[in-house]
Length: 318
Image (cartoon, rainbow, N blue to C red; front, side, top):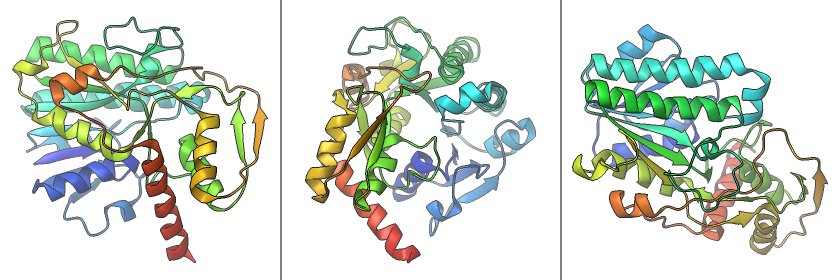
């Protein structure tokens, strides 16, 4: 049995779908705060509605599982600044509950979501796993704490922990309705509707945007990699950057959407958001060399897939 926390969410549901296709027996734990049951429609999974912050719920969910994909989290940087306690309960206490339940139930391996936010705003690019960590938000600090905790559990109990430092993920099922959604989902919906977009800053800030299908691939490879290959030297746990290894500005994204849709998408520029990092992209050579990870979907193709999903979703709702 495989457990996916946050399995009804954007990334989690794509991961669940891939696991089911591979023939895995899957259990999902999700509190549905941002996840949606419709993301799991038609998939033969065991679903538990509950919160990772509740220890007993997590113990129940982990029981009988040999592998965990820990994706559940409060994923908003701005919200973590506004509500640091909420961030701590979910991203620190909740992760501890998952890790400790894995220890108690003898889970073979935990693949968990970290974030490129742990690198902070240090100017060195591209970001490498051996770089100093300098989180500047409660969200980023919680992700660093998850990595420290994972290393301690590997060293103390032998539980195999694999951390994936996600860059900026985009793709179908990413909800654009929340002010804390990924920027590309918001841009895609507005572009499809022929509307303008708002950019906080001058639009020259860069990110390493990666399609959700490629992030699923990284998770599956992290679960399958041999133990010997996971010994990386710098930490007692294995940590890998997951992105495309490319730097793309928000202005370039808007230009790509103009190219795909044929719409003239006006941009309004506003003040930079608190806690936002100016530039970020990843060196993905470690994931490529050790996990065999190789992103398959270009930014343009990923945007086309995302726009197609929005178009289909709008048609279903009409």
